[in-house]
Amino acid sequence: MSEPTIAQRGPYRVEVQAGQDYFWCRCGRSGKQPFCDGQHKGTGFTPLKFHAQQDETLFFCGCKHSQTPPCCDGSHNRL
Image (cartoon, rainbow, N blue to C red; front, side, top):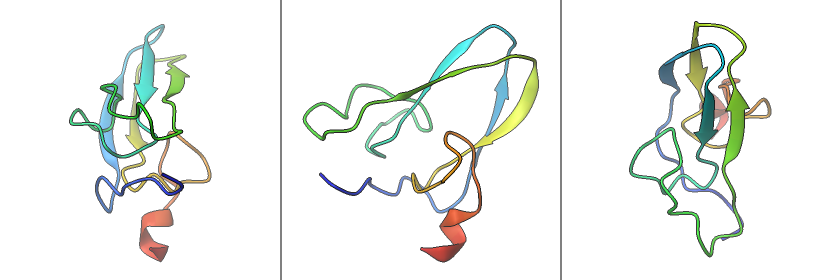
């Protein structure tokens, strides 16, 4: 698998909590988007660990093509 599966053409709104780790799905196959559920096995993709520094609302990439992962950079508008 050389290209990730597009999970959705837009971001996921996520409320992160300071001190928590989040594992963003890079392959797009997870059933728990935008987070990893292990469906990447055998794809060559691995999840991206994100450590929240503060409580805040972030927009995690759903198309899996962001240049600023795990956050959305609008790449879904160019797909």
